[in-house]
Image (cartoon, rainbow, N blue to C red; front, side, top):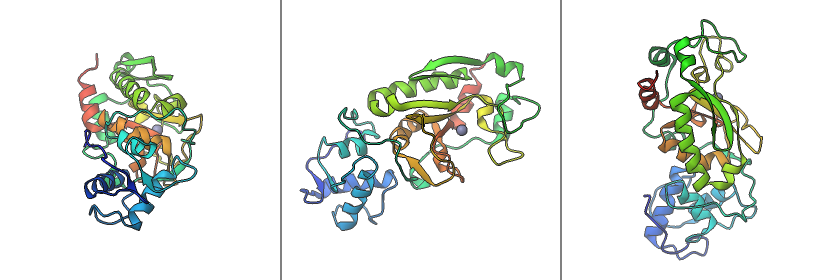
Length: 271
Ligand SMILES: [Zn+2]
């Protein structure tokens, strides 16, 4: 899909070639906007409405139409590796929220880690945890932490996780420059319990998870809505093996963490 392109316009008053419509329907489906039913190559009203719903994330006046090379095409396809820079003239509020994408459309092929796995591979960060951030006491873990600049901010985290984040941020800078400029962090390393739990250790405790802000705004926790800017960068994190918290039972869209396969690999790189 990364080399696919649109041959003509799709949507309201578009040319609507069936191959183009099918491509658009597949991309909408992958982004959680598959409200039109089957991918059938037919641009019916439901497909136009799905395009409108997608456009609401960044256009004040959605027109239900996708032109080759236009902003909607770039936002829709850019996440799939098609060379696409966000237009400088686009003043859309990337902090506005849209319903969280369907769980089946995010984190495809990745598994989330659990505490047993993390404790086994990376050890226990501390002897006990509370609801506030505390430093790790595990000597080996401490040896493998680093404070470093990753793109637009500085974080403290597990060395291989921070290196991976640098690669993620380089891609975001290239493919989603507008989001990149808005990015900040609400923290990476932080030994504590999962919010609302008295037993589960947060993956921030190992420095393998990061919370992001856009224009200084945190995505609201557990409201099943996600900031548009996060939907634009989630596919980039995904291809680097990072698991997106938007899929957690309690939606946590500002949170990205190393997937099981990634942590497995990082664990072999510790000193
Ligand atoms: Zn988090």
